[in-house]
Length: 225
Image 1 (cartoon, rainbow, N blue to C red):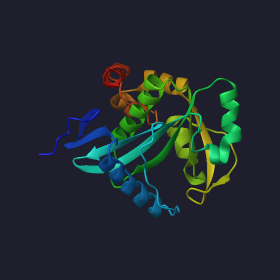
Image 2: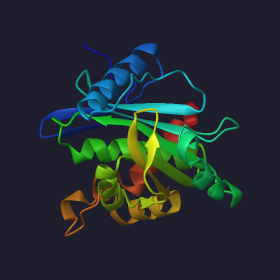
Image 3: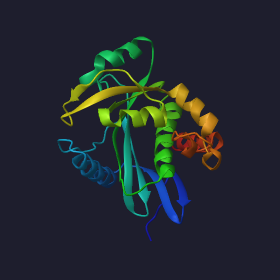
Image 4: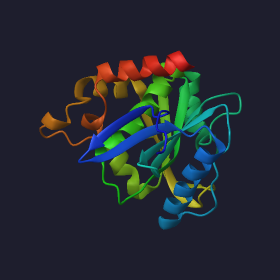
């Protein structure tokens, strides 16, 4: 039986068990890279994408049993910057000049056959815990194809910061989107864990953890360094 003791979180939804883990081994990064390349190719994006061992990045993977069904990477600002600087540095520097500690969300891939808002919400919430609690980031950016922009605005509260530019890493058009982590924390406080009583709320936040669960996960991650 496979050992899932390294799961950050576990959930069972309609008899399916999902776990979130850090892809901090060569095997873990390779498995996440395979999903990224599969999903990027399906969307028509160019290039071969490989996750590297980088001290300024952390990659999370969602598992259904032993299969990787989703992955996302958090990049934290450093003297070498973040990936989005290649195309949107002028916009990001405005936030740096205000004293913001910026981070970026990149290499997001999720198996479209797994339609679980719980798994996707959990993945984003743990990314938030790392960004806010572990790295004390204040503002997050993401580069998004124009056809997906509305999803991130409506589901997570991102705001568009730029017109369309070409992202050479995928040879495709992209907007730069921004999200205040203070806003994200407030939405988690308001809606996290209320999926059974969300009313007309259509964002992803009801499928996040509650603030009590968030505090427990953050304490656990801080304790293990």
